Image 1: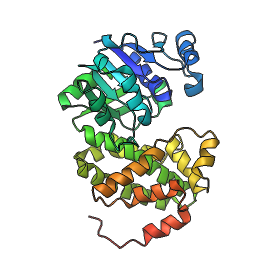
Image 2: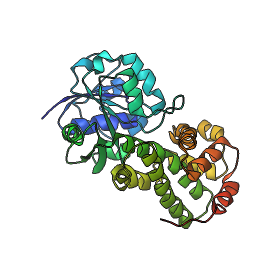
Image 3: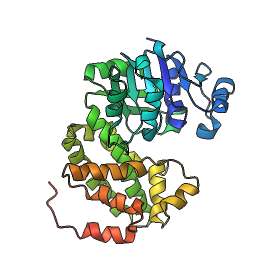
Length: 330
């Protein structure tokens, strides 16, 4: 069944998800801030600055501003995690009341430590929250390559219903009722991707990276459980699926950023080089604060925070981790 879907955020990921929603047979409106990009989507059916020569569906319509949002059957929020609050405030609660709002940013808010769904509840309490996460790169989704993700909702039945709107031959949502767990997986995988990339950049070997990934999985489980989510989410697409992709592929901005850190670069210099946004930079100190407040043993989050803050280099951090008291694995 065709639905009217608005996608807020015309970057690489927002445009890719708009393409996916369109390929699922929906009437899709993509909302962006940059008029030139909006015109390019409408006239040339491309977005070269983010997606290169990938052809966008000619039926995809782009606009600036929020006109018509009240007619949406579903809304995808695809702005950076640190911009969610300002964007929701600009929209106001009325157009979102009673609407399924699918949160697609992966990160915790720096100022408040809030998850994305908590921000939505505060600014639009009558909206219906959903969270989309999982192993997915924008170029793959936009190009129609097979992708499977997790869509979490207030109930698994509602997640199934909204997921059916996005499902196509190339985009397969799996329903979940664990909003907290899916959000924590999406946020923290970026932090761990920074650490895994730093291991690669420092030339510490695949054995070290694999061990890091396994211990990140265990640490993430502790974080999810402490925040009220389900550890079972770890075994799905939003958990191990996204963690494995982000911690092993140079297509991940967080992984690339971590590689540059491992090679001795500073955050300031790497950002100046035009590397692009790495959400893990914002989430790491928040995750560390959450872990400390909840008394969660999270040495890898602390190590990444130490690295990005510039307080220690990776050649000093690794011995600190290796000298921690020995433990039983289970």
